[in-house]
Each structure stands twice: as structure tokens, then as C-alpha cells.
Length: 442
Image 1 (cartoon, one colour):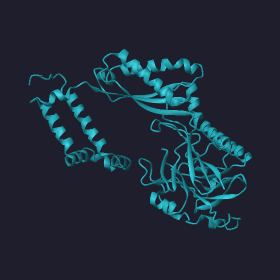
Image 2 (cartoon, one colour):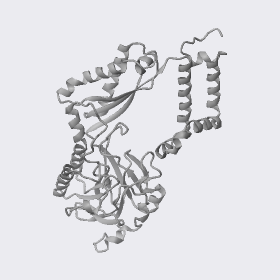
Image 3 (tube, helix red, strand yellow):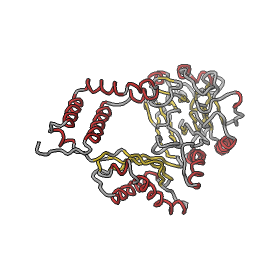
Image 4 (cartoon, one colour):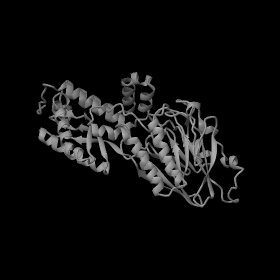
């Protein structure tokens, strides 16, 4: 008994995009509509692929106070799905907790899970066969630190005893809808925390997860999947965003296919300015990178943050002069014809300077100058992991009192920490060698 469902999460309908300023009016309207357009794209995908069901794993709305526009746009899409006999399964998350004031009056084909305990509903394929049981639980408050997954039943089909279940040997496919954090979850708030091992022991076939905005498959046996959010809302959420189309076969074998549905794509790219000593060359490299970002957009508007890197004689002009402002103006001017023609554009959100002044560390290494001592001492430190770890811990100790920073720092690799020390060396040498000259004969 085959069936197909679509897994999506974190729609954040009607997100205000407060951090964006100085956008042209035409682009600003595109931004404000982007979460709604992504939802429309999701509905079209469900209809186009003839899915039996749509699973929404929390944070449908961006805030507990839902705008009338957000509710109306969601319901219009749900009505279209109902006309095609698509079942919809919804849990609420930390952004849109389900309260008595926000209770649904849902159509028959929509199942909204409550907040008191996990609930289970049947899922039917187009042949009206009961092929799966979907279990889920909504948040009743904006911050839920209890392990909700621990309460999910190991035999959820027991709740469907009143239904005519498949004959013995054809067990129901078990789906768990969960909005929460699996195994720490990186930089996100640790709501409804659980472990991957715990989910695996529950005996479900597919965990449809929400809350983490990065698309990832944590396990394939069983499937434990974050679909990511539907539409990026800031530059930390880069790359394609969308949903998974999931095909389940009679033997419960499962196939996933990701479909990008975002209306505006956010990217962050590096522009290597190594050796560049003329503003004209810098502008050429910038516009070349803009074209690469356009390709990444796949026909969408692209909001881009470009990071200038490398050792370059132009570093001071980037960091302290007016060159960055001039490059940004050039970038915007190059995109205006497309914007006025209603074509997708690559628009600058930010340009960061992470370049360095050209400095010859190798030349300083062999000198008896203080800078040479700094270079040699630092390179010895790079070879001594214990000493290096101690230096990093001491240097960053003030950050460990902040929970999110502590979580981020604890997740950094040894190679990343070595890179920090190397970057610090170049910064120190850059500061110390101003006005100094290396005597190549020493």
C-alpha cells in the first residue's frame, strides 16, 4: 500500500523582517510577501505531486499573535488541499503556541494536535486505505523545556482501535511530528530536547521534525528529518529552502526528494582579494561574484552578503576608507535595470571586510626583531595542542557565561581553533609592522 506525503516546517507566515532597511519599495514588498509566496509554492507542490498528506511540524505562524492576513492565507491554501482530498497534519511550535484563545475551527481534512499529550490520527491514501498513523503534540507555551518525545507512545496505532486497520502483517507506517531540539541542536533554543537514540528506540518509521532551520537528515533507519524552514528570513539562513516529498512503499521502504520553494534566496559568499592592488580590479571581482550569486538564486531574487578576504594592499581602503561604500553603490547601480524591468536581482545586504594588509610573515620569522619572536612563539603554540587549547579557553573565558555563545564555542573543531590562532598572528603582525621594514639580509 503505497502513499506519498510532504514534510515541511517553520513557515513563519507574515514574518516582519525587521532587520532589513534601505530596500527599494519594490523589493521591500517582495520581502514582506516572501513567506506567503513560499506557502503558496508548497501548496502547489503538494497538488502537483498528488500527495496524500501534508505534514507541518510547527511554527506555522511567526508569532502567537497571528495576523488576519496570515490566517486567511493559510486557510486559503488548506481549502485548496481539501478540494484535492489532501489530509493536513499540524503541530504548533514555540513561535505559535496553541492556546485556548487561538484554538482552531479546522476543516475535516485537517488534524491539529493538542497540547496536553501526544495524539494519533490515521493517514489514508488515495484508495481510502489506512496506511499510516501520525502522532504529534503542539506547544502550549512559547518555551517548552520538557522532553515531549518521551511521552510519544511506542504503539501509536493502539489509539486507532475503532478503525478497520490493515490485516496482520501489513503494519501501519508510523510517523512522529515533533517540534524540538535533537542532540543539543547547535545555536537554537533547546526547546523540547531529546536525543536521536531516544527517537530511534520509539519504533517509528519517520520523524518529521521542526524548529531547526537547517535542512538535515539525522538518520535513515528510521528516518529522522529536519526539513528546515520554508523561507529564509536573514543572512544566517543561506541556501535553498523548501520541503521533502516522501514516498513510502508497501514494505515501508522510504524515499526522500527535496524541493526548493523559497521566494527569495539568501547567500553569503567570499570574494578573494588576495594581491589586488587597484580598485578597478576589486570592482571586477565583485561583479563577477554577483553573477555567481545570481546562478545560486535559480531564477529568484537573491539577497547577498559578500565577505572580502585575502591579503591585499587595498585592505586599509576597504576597512577605513570609502572604497566599500563605492563598491556597494556600483553593485546597486548594476542591478537597477533588472529591478526596474521586474527581473530577479542580486541585492546587497551587507559587505564585510575580513581581508588583511599584505604582510610577509615568512620574512619576519628569521629576524631577531620582536615581531620575529611573536611569529616563532605563535607557530610553536600551533604545534602544541594542550597549550593552544589553554590559550583559547583563557582568551574566550568571558564568552562562556552566555549560553548561546558557549554552545557555539563548544561546537568548534580543532582546525577552526587553529585557524583563529593563525588569524590572530596575522592581525598582530599587521599591527606591529606598521612603519617597520624587514631586513632581508638578517
